[in-house]
Every structure is written in structure tokens, then in C-alpha cells.
Image (tube, rainbow, N blue to C red; front, side, top):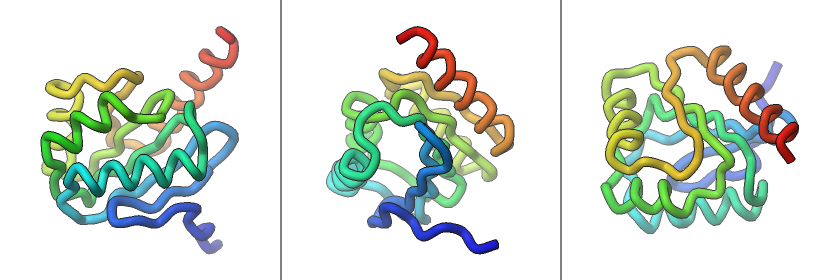
Length: 131
């Protein structure tokens, strides 16, 4: 089975709608600066609006500048994010984001896509029940 064509494809990542309210994004092997992050967030805003839950595979990501992480933490459009990490470098990037940038939305690190998706579904369903 072929993967669906990405809904967005920019310098930072490709994204797909997995299911209602959940978006998968695969970050590219790049060093993300502030302008790249702003463009990625704008693309996602246009494609999905505000409030989607993101399954973010950061395993190929090389690095993100502090300004880009700060911007994402404060201006992100996600309801929450599960960060997938399969390498020591991506785990370090994810931990730095959580520890120092303190995103305004629920965010957790995972090494299992299945567990990450289960957590996202639980969070999404809980937020729908609270509305």
C-alpha cells in the first residue's frame, strides 16, 4: 500500500491527516531556523487550522535553533504533540524542547508510534468530552 501524498511539504517537514483531528508530520534531516519554523507553522495552519493533535516524527531532524524552538512553544497551533524519537540526537532535541521551551500544549516523547498514537487519541477524546 502506498503512503498518501503529503498535504504539506516544506523545508521542515511533510504532513498528512491520519484521522479526524490527528496529523502526522515527518521532519526532514535539516537544521531548522526561525524562518523555516514560521513557514512550517503557517503551512500547517492553512492545511489543518488550529487545534489538531500532531504525531511528530523528529527522528531525522538534525537540530533546531533556540529561536525556532521558542517560537514553536509559544506560537504553535497544535492542541498537543507526541514526539517520536528513534535516535539519540532526536531524543536530545525532543528533551531540550520539553525542558527549556516548555510548550503551551501537552507534549510527550515516545519511541513507539503505536503508543504515541494511542496517547494522542486519548488526549483528543478527552478534550472532545470536555468541550
